[in-house]
Length: 101
Image (cartoon, rainbow, N blue to C red):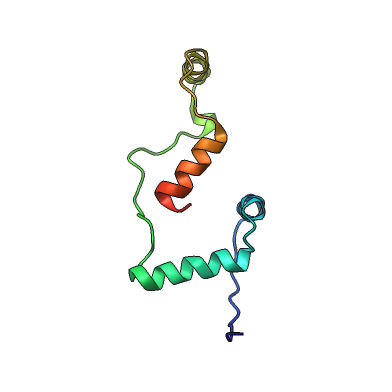
């Protein structure tokens, strides 16, 4: 068995829990996922995904007027009614395939 080293990281509890749920479904222990990330850093000689500033800042819920909020919700409802949806399992598969997420 190869020698290992310990890494201690701090993350938001919600992010950790969400990642653990996904990794559990995939059957990948958290330590293996971190190891995969680090191997990719070495292989690609950098962060293995793009790091960019968003083209626009997401609006905080309280910063949006009720009319703007209702308009955005109506758009979402219209998309659902028109069938412009993607099943969650297909979305997850495409994220894994396209981005290695």
